[in-house]
Length: 625
Image (tube, rainbow, N blue to C red; front, side, top):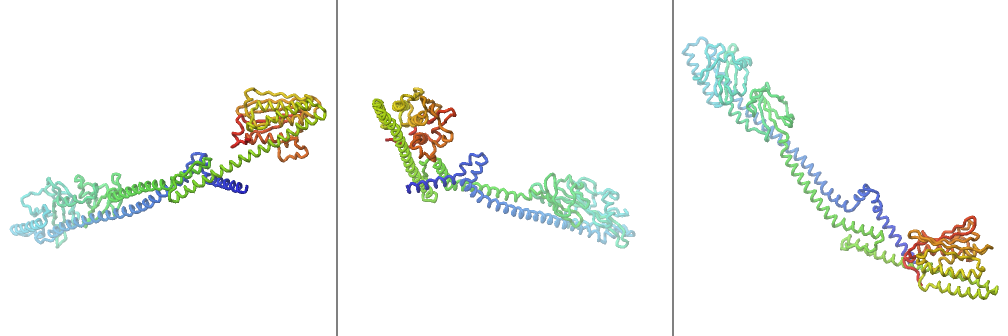
C-alpha cells in the first residue's frame, strides 16, 4: 500500500506539472486576440524574431548612419566643387575683363589720342600724322587682343570726327545713341555693354554676338570730357568658355550685370533681358520650376555677378546611388536573416514545438505518443527523457487502473457478502417462526423456495443477470414471505417484455422488497401491496418499488443512504437499501443510484436508476467469479 500511495503521488505530481505547463492551450479558446498573443509566445516565433531582428537591426542602423554620413560628405564635396567652379569662372572672367580694361586704359592714357582730341591749333598735316599714329596704336591693341573687333574714339566737340583702326568702314552718327550717353554719364568709369547680335557701332547684324566696353576721355589739363572711347568685342570666345560650365544635366550658370540683366545665359534669347531671380548675397536654396536649386553667387570686379544654378536633386545624385546600394545591402541582410531564422527554427524551434504538442496529447490521455527526435543534442536528450517519462507514466497508470479495478471488485463482493447474510438472516427467521407454529408444509415449501432462490443467486454465470430472471427470483422470494404473513402481501410487477432482456446486477431488487415488507407492511394490520414498475427513458432505466406500508418519517429519509448515520440500534435493518445504492453507483457511476420518497399519507417509493448499458462496461474490469 505504501508503494501504491507513492505511485499515486507521482502520478498526481506529473498531472499537475503538465497542467501548469499547458496553461496556454486552455486560453487559446478565448478568441483570436488571445491566439495571436500565444503565437507570439511560441518559441518558433521568438527564435525567428530574435535572429531576424538581431541581424537586420544592426544593418539598418549602420546602413542609415553610413548613408547619412556619406550623403553629407558627397553633398558637401559637390557643393565645394560647384563653388570652386564658379570661383574659377569668375577668376577667368575677371582676367578677361581686366585685359580689356587694360586695353582701354592704354587708349585713355595715350598722348597721341589726347593730342588729337585737345589740340585745336594743329595743322592739317600734323593732324594727319597724329591720326595715323593713333590708328597704329589702336591696331596694335587689336593685334594683342584678338577678341577685340574694333576700337573707336569719338571727339565730343565733333571737330576731328572718329578715330578708328578700321578706316574703310563708315560709322553712323553715334552722338545721340544710348550707349554714347551712358558713357558720358559714367564720368570716366568703365561701362560694359551686354551681348548683342547687332553691332553697337555699325548698327548692323554681325552674325555672332558682340559686347562692348566704353570710357569717357577727360582732359589732363581741365578734367573735362573731350572724347568717348568704345571697344567692341567678339563674344564667341567668352560664350564658348561659359557654355562648358554645367552642373549635372540641368544645372547651368549665368552672368548678370549690376542692373540684374542677363549678360550671359545658356539661352541666347535671354541676353539683355531682366532676370526674374533676385541676386543672392550667398549660398541660397531657390525653388526653380518646383525643383529645389542651390544658387552659388560670385561678384566680378566690374560689378557684375556670376551665379551657378545647381539642382539639389542632381547635387545628391551620388548620395542617391549610395542610398540605393545601402537599400540593397539591407534587403540582402533581411533575406539572410529570414534564411537563418528559418534554418534555426527548423533545427531548434520545430522539435520543441513538436515535443510540446506531444505533451498536450499525453495530457489529453494519449500515452502512445513518442518523440522521434532522440539525437545527441540537448533537444534529443529531452526527447528521450520525454519518451521514458511517458512509458513510466503509462505503466504507472495501468498498474493503478488494475489496482482500482481489483478494489472495485473487492468492494462489490463485500457488498454482496453483506446482502446475502442479511437476506438469509431474515428468511431463516421467517422459517423459524413457521416451525414454531407447526406449519410443516409451509416450512417445506419455504425451504424448497429458499433453495431455488439461493441456487439462482450463486453467480455461476457472472455478476449480471437478466432482468426477467431477477424478477422470477423475486417471485420465489415472495413465496417465502407469504408463508410467513399468511398470504397477506401481494406483489405486482409491471415490466415491458423487451426490457426483460436487460442485464442488471444480481440481487438488486430483493433487498428493497425485503425492507418494504419488514419495515413498511409488517407493522400494518391490513394486507400489503408492493408494486414494481419498470420504465425506460432514452439510455436510462427507472425501477419504482412502491408499498402501502406505514412509510418513513421525513427526518430519517436523509440518513438512510449515508455512511455517517448510526444504525447500531437497528442491526441489519437498512444494510440492503444502502448497499443497493452503492452497488448501482459502483457499476454505473455517481449520476445513478437510489432515491427514497415517503408521502405524508403513508407508503414508501424507492426509485432505482441505472443505464441500459451493462454496468461492467463502466467498471474497467468487471468483478466476476
